[in-house]
Image (spheres, rainbow, N blue to C red):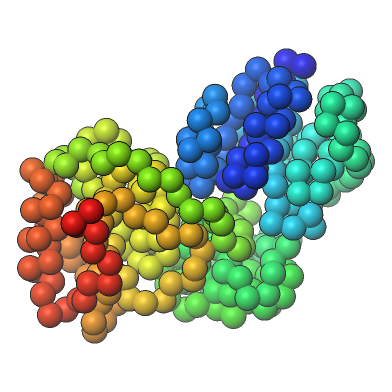
Amino acid sequence: MNLVMVVHGPEAFDAGDVERLIGLLSPRQILVAGVMARTAAEESGLPVVCTDERPSVVLAALSGRACLVNRGKTPKSGRIFGEVVAGRLPGLVHVETSSETVYRWNRGDESLAEEIVRRTEYALVHAKSTGARCEGVREVRGCIPGEAVFVNGIVIGTATAETVVLSSRDGGLRAVSGLDPKPHGFEKLLRAGLPDLDAAWCKSGPVRTKPPRQAGRASRGGRIAVIDHCGHTLYQEIGEDVCGVLAVGDDTTAVCGHICSHAGIPVFGVVDGDADAIVEPGYAPGSVVVEVVDGRDDDIGRELAAVRDLDAARWEEWVEETLRILAGRVRIVLDLRGE
């Protein structure tokens, strides 16, 4: 078919969809979009190329036949995701495995859509995405009440409705409806400046439901990467020279622990007990997580990043000295140094 498959999210890998589609469609290339998708793809061992871009950007840069592959947490959320991506493109063929549907959005490649339907026996649906948005307003659709809502990788609250409406008018960011806000989350998000809601990465629900696979231990000495409430940037920071990660924030620590477990990189996590259970836990041997006794993880994290040497002869020694500095201010809630 001379096809490029752009895969979004980890679930398509974890459920075996990608492997099955490779057998049916014989794509010439598989591009992976998304942080947890990259982790799941690497664990799968399938021949893929990982990117740091969102699916619409990856697809827009391609010439020739291409399709989006996604497994939404529900068929409805899968369709909504495809509509959002299609709203940024002139046309799109979207393979939604949660409902076994091929969507031909906005008059996308008809022959490609029909060929995929023939080979997969999925249903074909012709659909239209208007892409119209109100300036300064963003809707996060397909939410399940009670699940976490993210903007640029930071949890800003809990969904109370299927649609969360956010507004960035008047120089601030606020929840208009559908969200029980997490003030500390808004504070973390705005610390980097007011986000462009039209371009922001917005999602809801867990980032991955499958536990990570353990890998062999990484180098015991080298650079320590600092990830402060931005777990989605982790892959940009970890290279062969990294022996460990200083993660600041409950959700960031969970995401870093999950990804680094697969990479064999230990994590020193600083948390304050407001986790949102967004990912299955997992940590590489040598990891330590401490909870702030009084105060916030932000303050301790910034202090450590400023005063600690981030080049370590040995990870274990760096951890010991860091714990000594924090004595009386934190308590250890996870300690895998003996593993």
